[in-house]
Image 1 (cartoon, helix red, strand yellow):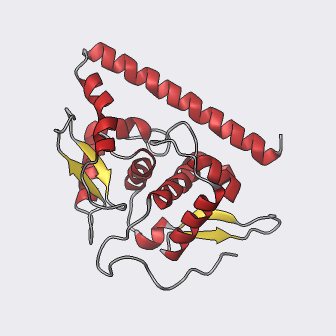
Image 2 (cartoon, one colour):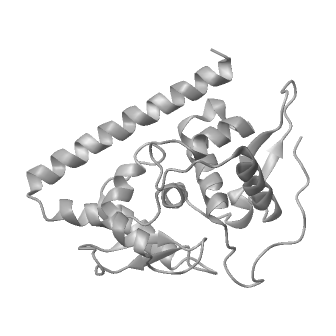
Image 3 (cartoon, helix red, strand yellow):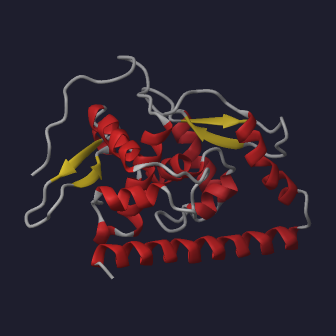
Length: 235
C-alpha cells in the first residue's frame, strides 16, 4: 500500500522541476541505496537520515536533523518524486523514490550519474565514472561523456550542464540542473581545486592517488552500510 500524492505540482509548468538542496540529498540517497543495498530498500526515515549524513560519498558532508529529512521527503512527495510505502508487518512506513514518474525514460546510466551528481555536486567525467562504479559501471570515460551529452540534450529540458574549464579548474566539469542553473559558485570552484592539482601531477601519481581514494571510499561505504545494517537489526 502506498500513500496518495498531491495532484498539484511545484515549479514552472513547462520548465524543469526544481529541488532544494535537502530534497536533492534525500533523492540521491534513495537512488543510491536502491542500487547498492536493495535488500534494505525502501528505507525507514531513520535509515534515510543516516544516509543523508554519511561522511563517505557525500559532498558536502551534512548534519541534517530528522525534521529536515522528513520535510525534504514531504517536498519530494509534493513534487511526485517520492512516496511512503506501508508494508505488511512493518512498524513504520518506508521511503521510496518515484523518479520514474517525472523522468520515465531515464536509462540506468543516466540515473546513476544523476544520483552521484545529487550526492557529490559538480564533478569531472573521470570522477563520475569512478563514483558510479557500484550502481552502474561504465566501460570508460568516453562512455560517461556520451551519456552526459544525452542528458545535456534531454527532452523536454536538459538535466545536466557542462561547465567549461576555467575559474580555478583545469578540466571541464558537469553539474545537474534540478537545483538551479548557476554554473559555478565559490564553493564549487574550491571543491574543484584538488582535481586540478591532481591533473597536473605525473600520470603514475594520478593513477595511484585515484586508486587509493577509490579504495578508501569503498571501505567507508561498506562500513556505513554495516553500521546501518547493525542499527536495523538492533545490534
